[in-house]
Amino acid sequence: MRLNTLAPRPGSKHRIKRLGCGESSGHGKTSGKGHKGQKARAGGTVRHGFEGGQMPIYRRLPKKGFSNVDFAIRYAIINVGDLSEAFEDGIEINEIVLREAGLVKGRWDGVKILGNGELTKKFTVNVNKVSESAREKIEKAGGSIASPGSK
Image (tube, rainbow, N blue to C red; front, side):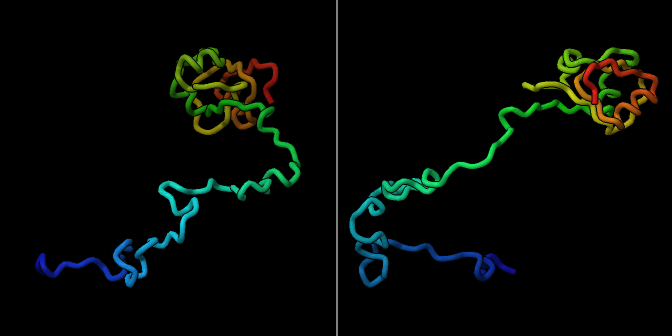
């Protein structure tokens, strides 16, 4: 193999469309843009969904349905395995302690503990929600759940 014999794979390269190279080239004169008009100008495009001033379809059709996304309660999710790695034995875990440890960041409506991972330490958990598997693992390790709304 020599450098002068190297070539790209067939079909991987395509010749560029050379505009404005005479009328016989097929891309001369107006260079494929037609005659005048907005789309013939430099930077001339119509925005997505624009229908020439006619009332667009997204405004003509009635709005139906309801989305609960604005009213939904969003919980920060923490696994029991993360608790076991981050905290000492016998500590009380609440949202403030979790934020100080860096396990909860950002704006949330509450904290939910899930049962993924192994738990070997004893904790008192005081958060908004605890899953059934997390509840079993916490109580099996000798800990307790002291939250009023844990479901």
